[in-house]
Length: 609
Image (cartoon, rainbow, N blue to C red; front, side, top):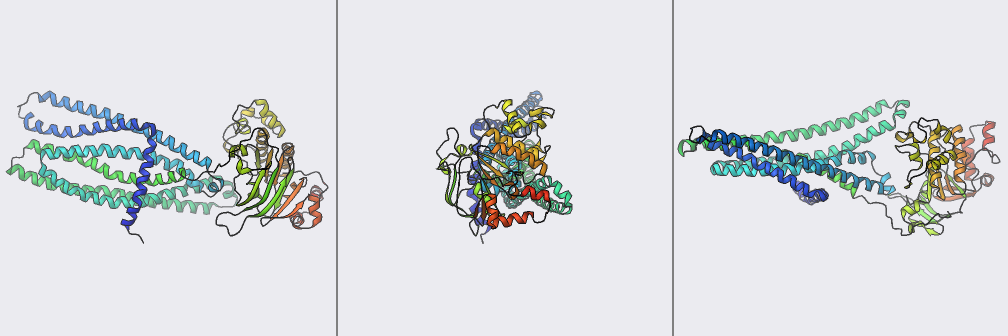
């Protein structure tokens, strides 16, 4: 096991690297930061002057030997305070300017890295922790970094200036102060180490709190219907109590630093007073000199206290910086392709001996799967959960990379295409429809850089069988959909996603359980829209509801990562294999004649989903 000293030594390069990363992000604002520090330095330099004034004021001003002190000293005090006020305001304002710009840049870097994060990395990430990095950690880094440098520069200069005054007034008394100060510093180091551990635990627990609250918001209907109140209250209470515990531990460590440090200061003051009284009686120390010395000594306590307290803020900043920079430094998608796409691909898709294994998995998810889909053909992928359907389809947009084999479009390996060029040829309609804050028109035309005419948006909505509904809304296509279109029904959301796919007009379409969450009426409405969308496009359908794949040109049955069966709906039923077994399993509990008619192989009532 490493000792504390070993751990401190090993962590020192990490902390230095964090400091470097933080302050290199000053960028073009370094001149403003430098000006702010200059202004704060001027403010610090004015503080000891007030103590220096005490000596002539007491020794010469009150005995009448210097009549000019009646007006010159008050004017000097007013002038110094005015100068100090102006420089303090200017320095503090400019440092806040730098902090806000740093926060702007950090969040921009974080969001760019978030958007570029590989799909597998993103799915493995804790979303609560990701949100926490944007809301809390980034703010801590920008705010505390400027606060730390401001306090260190201003208070350090103040302490140095006051020490110079103390030495000038009496080097013997100053020596006593300098002997006692290291005891205060050593005590502070112990609490700094403790605060570092507590702050790291607090940040992790804040992320857990964000996750629990997010799940409570997203799952509020499930909580109500399944009476999950007790469980969610207990989860929240546990996290909330842990946060309070960490907060109190940090408060106790932070609070203990000041009184302990002040005890050593008070001890040094007591010794100074005793020695000063001795000097006054035996060595002629004047009242003015002693008053100036005590005034400077009294002023040194506050900057020392702030320098001691900044240790806690520094640790919070460094822990937050670890969190922020770990996101910024996460690997992004490797866009190794060099080929752009001019126009529109035909849409021939081939999977050649494709295999895939997830990291740390015991077996392959896919094992040497070979499949060809001609341009304009519809192929359905069915099978038990975990058979590899979604993994296979996700290789087309390169959300997942095969560990063996190739995926080709029009005879070209998808890895040769630039990612944006490749994905411009693909559209997706899934069960989990994602819509964005904005208007209906903005969601339909999402991702299209050029302005889209209203007529084109309306044509896409009409083809998706949604225009009649949209026209009944107060602002038509300019109606705000709200957060993830929560005001729309499931069928309306699906048709809005279909309109988005229609306006993109990509040659290859992926349907991932597009109607599995809909009721029969909504499914029929969406189905008509899907048929218009699929026309002339290469379509890959992932489906668990086998009643929705009967019109597919081919049905591929996957089992344990391999192709088990292949053929049309009627052929596979006649084969009596895995597909027929799955089909019978889905409909064995319903003897309704209407259902039998709707699922009969010869029925044309059902389409693809």
